[in-house]
Length: 342
Image (tube, rainbow, N blue to C red):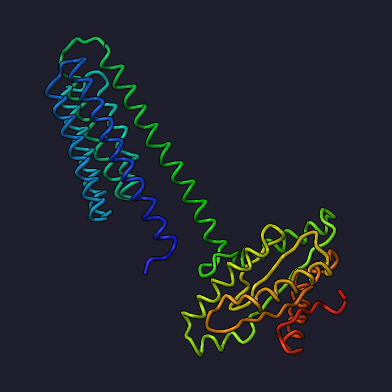
């Protein structure tokens, strides 16, 4: 079974593959047109157009089959073959050897570090040997428009490749960061994210950046009965529907996350105990009257505590948990706060 990280990595590689193939098609058509209309190099132009055709075919194959591994190998081998043939057709003139520079990013991006390193080493060794041989051939040449265009084209191709890769890498990092802070089932902040938010709110209280902060632990009453009567899939659907409802009700007033199981947590900055109790009462009646479960009425119990600057976060969580326990003892479907906060 693929993990979220593995799945995200595969999608990232697939995006790179498509980008590489599109760049190959674009540049092959552009260079082929230049070879026809500027240099009258029809043999090289034919080769360029064939390259565009085969790159399009690989892209079509990948879109139909989703075989990332085979498409990556075909792309890398096609790029290496095309670069080698082009350099030979040009006899290494006009800085055509520079085209080998586009091979390392492509093979490293698509085939990984180990295979990319060996393949790049082989290409570079062959290129050095080829140029060493060319130096033995007596010839006199001047660098002209062809040399300038080769330099421009290679630099532009590398710019596109690295720009896309860096943009894709940053997007992948942001997605991974989001996944690490999000509860998979409900889409709310997970416990790790809530821990960080509690630390942040507590530090702000200690630094007097905010005048008050409260933490609420909320529990679904008799949630086990839903799982027992209707199954765990229905229980998951209830959790998801409730999470959406809680997130809508909280809005930008605070943060809501899944603390664990059927427990949720709210963190409010610049809200005292009295206003937090008022909000939780509103939320309790809303859920009672508009249950997210179509098969069973839901009720919630709440435990509230302050985040005191002179006490630890663990102390606040213990107080909120005790208040929640009292709410359960008092018949559930009610709001209770830590006794010293009353």
